[in-house]
Length: 357
Ligand code: PHE
Image (cartoon, rainbow, N blue to C red; front, side, top):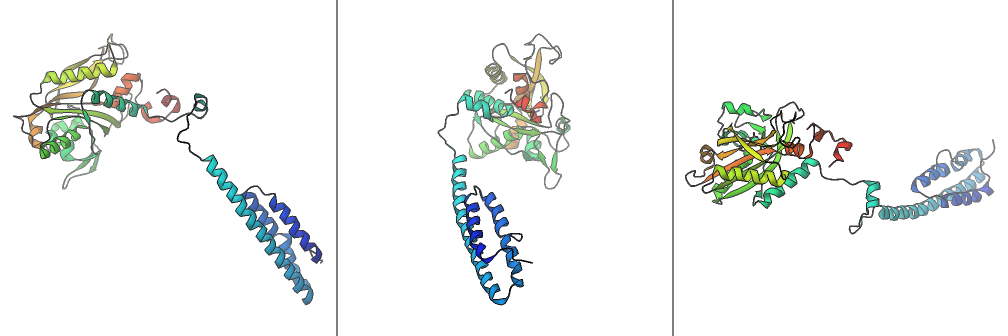
């Protein structure tokens, strides 16, 4: 069996390898070449394995040359690799460059598309803008609440039957206190009033948007995870007229001309008197249709004057202060504003739907 590589062709091996390596255009290509030229199945490796068949003198000489050839090729690869990765890095930097001053033209935009805020977020932002324009500040509270904030301070002691008005997710049951996923944004009222009582910083004019949870089976008009915005005013000599006026002003500002509000007697443990707040049906604009069951009105939320028992729970003197509160669904608002037939579309992330807004 003859030698794979004759001594005099070793230098040719290095020359050929250099040519091939110089032609490599990426690190991946270079890795492949390295395996081909220096790997276990390369000519060089085979020649090395055949050294054993040579006599001592030849073996020494041939072995030395093979070793030198390998070293030379390794060096060529190493230099080339440094060169290629430098170039790759430069190209990556150029490709990933972010020009913060870049103006995206409509033409570019139409090819790459652009992300935007979810319709519920857009609706929430607009609602907040309307209320800020009316002089309210914006506050937030936690989504996991203790029993005290979600129920008890809102005038619902343990076992109060009104608790069943909210289908509740319990995170922790019992001692020292149950923890729930808030079923409405009303617990944020309690937090604000406690803080204002502690700091003597009344009056309060605040809206509180946020996510709420109920163990409901989602349908065309309900979600188990949904959003509400709560309003709270605590000031001197607040009347039901202030509440009705605020709700009507908001309705006109958000829904536009031709849409009005009305209040109908209702019950919430934390307001007295309490009312349901309805707006003109935005589908039929009051004529009566299937969505509003022919009444011309759609229920949006609840409201009322803050119950003195709630003022007692948070340490505000109800002889000196009075207030109103309201709360309504942001998702429901989006549904009415954009005439979304099925509220479940809001959570399905179907791009054909999302792109409408
Ligand atoms: N928290 C009530 C609900 O979710 C709505 C409400 C808020 C009612 C404020 C009165 C006052 O059903």
